[in-house]
Length: 361
Image 1 (cartoon, rainbow, N blue to C red):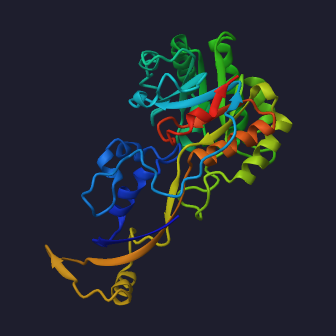
Image 2: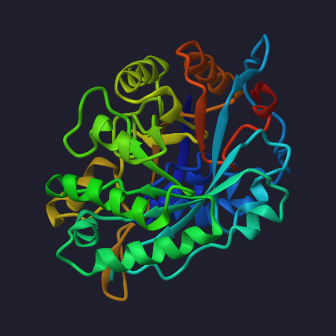
């Protein structure tokens, strides 16, 4: 989809990005957008004061045909403080509560209470999702020579008492810590015992990966959630979050190294937009001077002795997003591959018309 938007900029176009971003949600690393999404007024970027019906579809919407797709396990991610986006009629067997984050000091200072989900009528299994952002922090947490690792393991073992399982989502493990990551999983299993589930999120791969080798991690955990999304991301060229052909190649490889019972294929509910140019950045004087000339800017003025300007520019925005049609196509693809466990990132971002197309067998 292509959108032409005309707007004013005061030396940058950052305001445009923050207005448009809520329409498309964001992937797992776009946590800054979560704050904007909660403001429903930010979802309207038009110049009109007309009230927009949030349930009306404003494009040529394709409706699937046929029967709902059955799966044995359906995992869904729920953000803390967004528990209301879960409904008890959703066909979900496992809720992953997002989450507990390891801070810059290597501490887990907050563990969400699963009662916030259970109070909304969820009867299935709950899993605490634990994240660790940054390669340097991941190294400090995973390398056994640092005491941080023991403290993290101890905190997680205690947190597991309130949950059915712990899910590790460490997406920035350094290559030198690949073995440490696996021993971390082994130690965590020992701490929480076999009565609790241990699951792990791994990036989508088409072949054996040095950091996240599926075949070596699989024996250590109960389930592997393959994050089959972000094929195209915020700084890549525009494209689908997860092209159907790409998803097929991902699942075909995963099936060769992960047993059926442990394989959970992740599906996206979110979309992204890309603009064909970005002026929100730092500049050399020569670059600013050239920008002024090329855009015929004639209103440079001094504000508190600092030169500034405003100009208008047309840009092209490309958006790829998910709806019921695309999600059902993925469901049927994975079902045709004899995959009976799926996961959604994340509940709240979906087309509400999707849920009747999914059943639990």
